[in-house]
Amino acid sequence: MAEITLPKNSKIKKGKRYSLLNELHTYADFFKDSQNIYPIAEFYVYRWDPENDNNPRHDIYPINLDECGPMILDALIKIKNEIDSTLTFRRSCREGICGSCAMNIDGVNTLACTKPIAEIKNGVVKINPLPHQPVIKDLVPDLSNFYQQHKNIKPWLRTKTNSPEKEWNQTKEDREKIDGLYECIMCACCSTACPSYWWNSDKYLGPAALLQSYRWIVDSRDEEKKERLDDLDDAFKVHSCRSIMNCSKACPKGLSPAKAIAEIKKELATRK
Amino acid sequence: MTNVKDKNIERPLSPHLQIYHPSFSMIMSIFHRITGVVLYLGIFFLLLWYFSIFFGAETFNLVSAILSTQLSKITLFFFVWIFFHHMYGGIRHFVWDFGLCFDIRSVDILAFLTLVLSLSSAILTFIYL
Image (cartoon, rainbow over all chains, first blue to last red; front, side, top):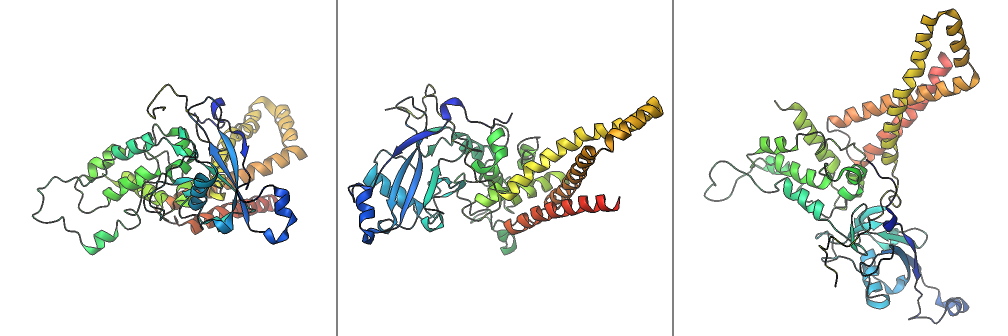
């Protein structure tokens, strides 16, 4: 059953407000000298520490944007380096290919490394971990279930015939069928944006796993399409998708998991 | 150090509905579900009208009188709107079932069309009936 509200231990409390003290002594100093005006953005960041029993909170970090890189991830790294070294988040490639820094920025899941600070409005940005997941610490969610579901769809080439001497060949046209599918980096932005996935993540596979599944279903080299479809053919795994479209709107790679799911539904409905 | 796999730690659930930016398509989706439920419940009131025939002219006239008050008419307008909304929403899902119109622009246009068409259909129904 859908739980609309957060459990008691997950309610977000007001947090600490940091100041730009390493540059200025007080805000009064800042306003006294109009020459000092530089763009400031306030970062509201979700914080939760497993070492104590406190509820999660939103800490507020003001950042001088003139001394910060262009992306949200640059600001987070600046906070960690200069203001609060306890801030915890995942990041690696800083160019949108590893999917580590997926988080909810101003209400939409995306990658912190490819989201420009310039896109935020009114100088305030709210950063939360990916929605409806258990939190390990701060912006780091526990994605074990998500990865298990990816494992369940067996995301590798499954064949029955003997391997060819060299590689498995594919025509140009067949190769084009997996465009818009193979680019998925498994960042979990889509699955954790989906209300159906929030309420049914135990039974519903979610957009990411289904897009990956379809990537192998349409692959001309894969020889177990029937088995793949058999595995998906129940009331929840695929059909919990209600075409809410949050997945396609969130995808930082511009893919459309919703379309991939619709194609699977079509395959399931039309096969003999 | 705490262990990530430690089951004894009561981990909070990250916020979801509380923080997610409500997109147009998301609202239209939940509205489609709500209109479906309202249609299901509303049909009993219309059936009441039919069944009142079995209880004679007096009952029928009473139910008819209740259904023709201003309040009932406003309620009926909303019911007709909800009917059209769910119908056009159904057509929208039908288009998607063919794997068409999945780019974000089309999705938003379809959602907007559903809203405009259902409202105008409801208004036209009330003007001409």
